[in-house]
Image (cartoon, rainbow, N blue to C red):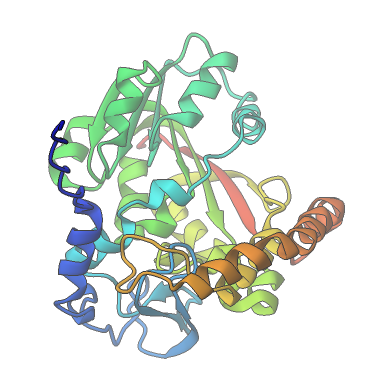
Length: 351
């Protein structure tokens, strides 16, 4: 009689074990103390704009966006603690889509009216998708990148950037190293996710040489879609979007730091994803939650079967919403529905 080999013990899902151990300690520690003043202007007249769950990964927790009635700055209140940031941002790359090459090429074309720069810093570059595309149109420009995560090191390893810096640009050591070094600094939808966007904006200006150019792209908190779609609007996406900064606030900082605003564009940066993304997230929320590493109890067979059966039925709705986004985009981008804006400014030489 042949003897069979002993069965191997089941593999341990280390990701699930880590998530469950963190959740067992409660989620209160994931939030910093609540603010009673605006982080942008210091005003104390705050009102709640919305309260929402994690609409992207469906991790446990509820988040609030407050709006300052003095300067209209919108911010997460309370914000995330260091532990909360690590918890809610973990595995986020699985749910992110980098900007398409067409959008990145359009961003570069917006800067072709200036002489080709020798050096360009992309702040919040992630895996370096923008520099990789920009090099096709600006082959003689040297691109560097910063990012709060080690993803920027992958960008350097794949030669998408020449120099990679892990951390926030406004950190004293990094800013001291990069001060007055670049002809162009780009910040594309990074300030919304920064814990201190005003400091990071000032740092971006400081990294420019006199006469250098700053190009910013940000979510428009005054988009009509924000009011219509509420927590499902991509610009509100909690807990990712920590700050939503009105255009006048950006202008004020630039002008107070010796910069001349060259162009402000509310039309071209509009991304036609509002209805499609909102429909996808709302429908996903209506279905039984999938089995994820942060789910405390695995889905039952009935929940799993129900989700599998109903998901195909949501496809026509999602496709129709996406089609509407693209069909209406030429009109919406020139109205109050535009969901983003771009500012290009020049840092003036010191007299």
